[in-house]
Length: 323
Image 1: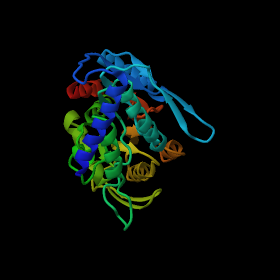
Image 2: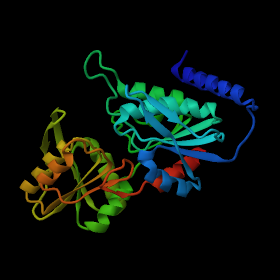
Image 3: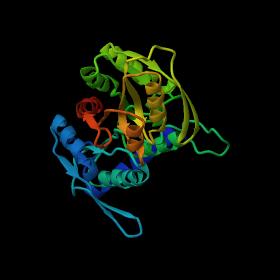
């Protein structure tokens, strides 16, 4: 059976079980929607709910001493459910989705739209070494089995043109926060150079520059390991220029650290950082400060102290379009 047909058949079986449990006919239509979220994303859930006109409801979690999870959802759900779950620190959250989505169907949901502001495991889209699991493909297939629609922001897609090919048989919307971040930067650094730390960041930097009229450029990066990178700056005049490093995601921050050091050494007046997804694991923030970075700005797609740009409105608009 083709993978897409398998996913559709699996969802049909789950729906049939849910209908049998409730005793309701399949053609019943319910206009109401529910917004489900977890406590660690409650601020974004509240903003998203305000834009959708839906009061968010919390999925309760309990972690047993052996690491297993117990979830508790509302006792009854309408046919349309919006499930907010970002995949920063993704492994436990993927298990939560594996439990929450079919449980929601058993409680009445017929259509589940996953709002996943940060979609993890998208970076490995090919096997670089024999035997490597192509995580993008397999996580995409898992989500296709669980939900009917996916809304995300700035997924880390390199050699893949569309998220629809990653999550087969599911309606997907991949938004970008580049324009919103660009507007934030332009209001505070009117003469800034938007600089992408590598060639892959060009799509976000160019989009922000086009929306704001700011100059932009990208560096060349050689990655030697998880925390070991080499940066080559573009050949431009750096003297006295305010620079804002812009990228879709910051994890260890090593690329941004090396780029900031190179810019300041070349004569840049200041270096700030603006990213969509502020993961900043370990001592990433301390390393950025030590490298001379001034301001650090991000969206609230990932809960973080640097979050200044809200993505709730764009997420709500996308959810409506998928409904």
